[in-house]
Length: 431
Length: 74
Image (tube, rainbow over all chains, first blue to last red; front, side, top):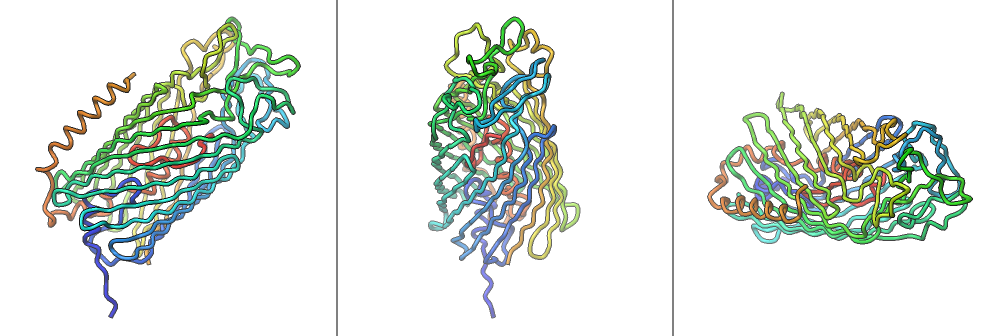
């Protein structure tokens, strides 16, 4: 007769700490442990107005060796198409831009938001994590990650250790990650605040560049009552190196008319300067989540506040209600609200009569912006796994720099709102 | 907006408040039936997908874990 292995210890540990971050949570109460757990999702993400679309396939496999050891392997393939705002502002005149490759140009019609439609990308990400117990009350994990895009390569390592206290009602964890990224943009890496030049003139660009990212994480999970548990985590991140978005630039406009000024002699272009960000960024964030079990359903609320030395402060509130409307089916409504302040060097435009600042970016993601998400997930459990479908709607709206709406610019929406739909199909099973 | 110093003070206050009360909280092992339910565990997959989307669309990332790699340029 085959012996059934029980994982009571692991389950108690999960109930206590939830194993957030690098250590994924294991399933439900005492039961037979499967050797393999497979989790696969298909994601479709689409923004309005023909902006970014992403189809993504994620598969992860967990090989459980015994109640003390398991290995996680995950593979993600993303296929991106569409267009994204370049940072330039709309104008009542047609605008010509040189594409990132420097081999051709494109024209944006009067009044239209300048989008860079030339990108088409496939991203492949692979990660592996070994997880093991260390005595009765400690666990550790270590992992490697890598991702590749045609213009980007990331390689990272991470580690984590956690310990239970107080009859496993308190779990404290500590994690660290290091990443090294190589950036090789199409057409080269633009020099910060150098002008866009005509086709076949790449003298505003250099060769490849790189950055490193260190993340530290410390957190604790505390069981409060039979029904509730709270988790608090603090994270600190330091990025160092090339932090610009190589495909983003700013318009330089006349302060009186709000129209783009002429670019370098002989280029035939208006003046557009490639963005320039500081070469380091320090971020810290505080995250808290409260989960509460009702007799049949459950509720999770979380909050995050983030602050960095670019002067961005953001707050996020997220709430989910898990409604187990039958023993094997559930619905999960979800809402999220996000707000951030602008980076101190965010500028919707530059003016031709001002001295060039040290740093400037018109990337809408560094603007003062608010966003919300509303979604619903349906799941159905089967004998060996679960099917799920999730639909979400995301909307974000930002504010341009207060001084940007001069002359012609007052006639245009400088930072048009963006909406996206997210559809996700999931299937996970054990054997 | 909030300065780094104010953020650090808020953080320290929360850490002290949350840790000092821990020793007297919690449940006995036989009272863990609700905590063991699958819907009381965080959903790692959905969180990872959301993190990757918001990492590419907003200025913040991570919080409960590590941000994934990638350009996030689009």
